[in-house]
Image (cartoon, rainbow, N blue to C red; front, top):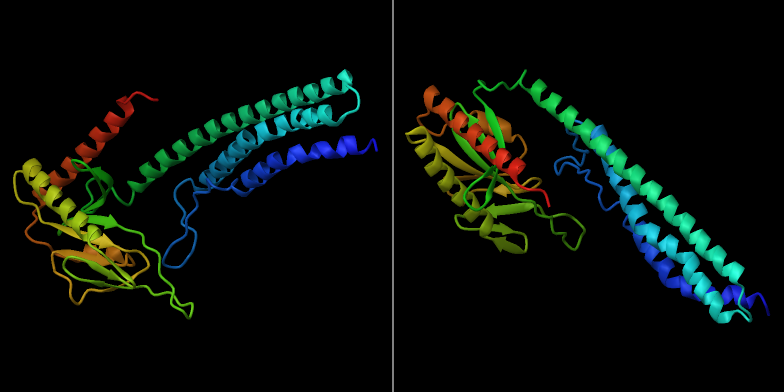
Length: 303
């Protein structure tokens, strides 16, 4: 039966088909959209529309880059199967398979070039939106404002998630994400008990988050004392978004919170003597350190 000569080569296409299915299942792997652990609403940042378009562009780049070789190889693999099962060799048919693969290579090369150019344009647009957004934030949070927030401040061998400077002192904020366990009834158990040396989650306990927060407080207190020439009141805050905190057995040196209404707590929490001159020196020192690290990153050779 002549039709079997065209049907049997499809056996060699199954591995390519299985790989294509995996690629399609993973096409949204780069989706960076996140939802709030408080109310599950999508979190939006400056330039969020461009961020979403950039995610889709990266998904398209991944799809074309991973699926392209599979589609390009399909005619060649099928052609090799035809050579095995065909009763006679037809060089015109083999040439058509090679021509089809060549055309598919050209099509996917065009798609990859298109995705690359689109990603470059979107990145430029996002950078412009971010820089304008940062300038507009100065309307409500100028440099001379008594409240100032810093993100990703590098210590000696690690990075501090956030540093908040208020009129009452300096807060080191470390954030840890933990998933709720589920009880047999399907309800989430989201209460954590805070002790001096550990956090007791439902079913397990951890010491490292408290240890790292205290380590960050110790480093920042010492560094600010050197930079400002005087003692600066510093307190550590460990944020566990979405969790209910039982701090009845906790020490006073750290504040462990769920994160909800954190800004209101920090705005009214006094830490100790903190005059205006020291406050301004602390902000300038942190701004200089953040700027120095950014400059070092710009000077690093790209790989």
